[in-house]
Length: 129
Image (cartoon, rainbow, N blue to C red; front, top):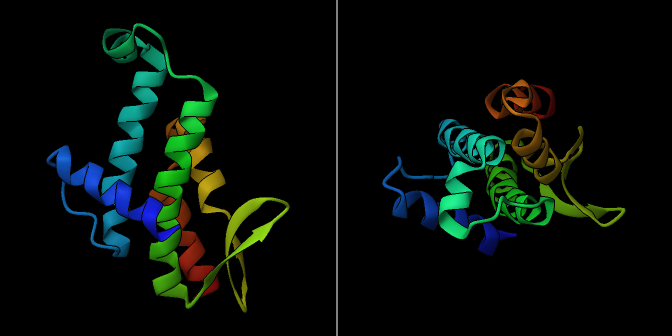
């Protein structure tokens, strides 16, 4: 998962965004990036220009894996957690509970701002710290 998280860091840097530095505050930058992806997914204009096809759910899953890995790595640092797998899904666990960062990012990409990542992470850290 660390290599996936490092890909998210490299992409943010390439896009000229604030550095993803594995802090809770950097989740705001991830939320901005996910918001842009969601808007592209909804409007399709960016993707039509880029590839002449809208992103499909498999492409969104790839992005969710990358950004979810970054979010999970941030959580691991702040809640003393570790990666595990539940029913084929990567999760972050500690003694107090389990969180599903990849699934949450996928929901953010497909549902939009109603699945705000910053709020989710703030609540997760408060509950699992």
